[in-house]
Length: 405
Image 1: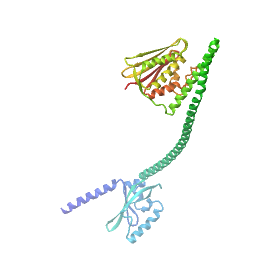
Image 2 (image 1 turned 90 degrees about the vertical axis):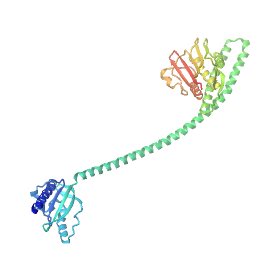
Image 3 (image 1 turned 135 degrees about the vertical axis):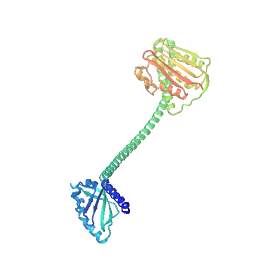
Image 4 (image 1 turned 180 degrees about the vertical axis):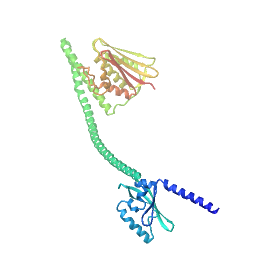
């Protein structure tokens, strides 16, 4: 009964051990003390591409490439003599060789087993081919990334260098532009002031000539004196625009807000501008709303309105009407100037408020292209906005809108 109890578990353990070795994923090979192969599991056969009959009884060195093949027997002999097998219990990486001579990386772990009075060495072999391929691929990818980073870094450095050069050029250009702008403003200021004195003299002389020529009753004298006066007035207006622009560029325009009667101011402007109107041009002023007082810079506002009406006179024909009205509501104060002139081409409207810009249909009509730029900037200084509507040969309407706080 005792034999039965111990014999059956022993048989079960042997079967279990055989099953484990036979079905192990890694290769398992056993050799004797002189390196002769005694057993080789199926995974090892597949790994080295041999059948068990081809390797059992052969020296284990047949599965090794040079120079490990030549060193193996010497290593076993030294271990047997000294009794010191340094490889036991320590895994190491080396190369195995298949039947066709192909070499592949593997990890070998060796255990020493004493059985039936002799030593048996069991080698556990794990194929590293896929792992090495992955490591090589990862290494190549890392190298590629390093090269890519190096290229990008070099490209970035070149871009930064180019940007620094461009920045230097822009800075130099900006400095030159600022200097040129200062010179231009100084020239405009000087020229405007210098021209105003001789123009005043010409205007006065023309008036005196007209006065002294009255007894002669010569129509030609009056005609030419009128041309002189008109030319002087036009040139004076141009110089005034340059002066206004110079002050705006230099930041010298300061808004001086006061409370004034818009109806009174509107009537004064309409009366003054009527004197400059063309033959049979009528300037009609009207005010809408129960209130007349507004709080703005009266001088800047007057300059804006005069500029708009001057343009209306200039770009409208004789026998036309120019509407000029003001309106005060609880929310805003508006001024509107409407003419029936040549209109502004659609393609030019986007650039209308740029300095020195003139629509292409103005032809020989005199002007500097500064008036609307000055008006827009004055309106902006007073926290207002300017709007317009225009059609070719159907006239233009400008509207100034100022919010009421």
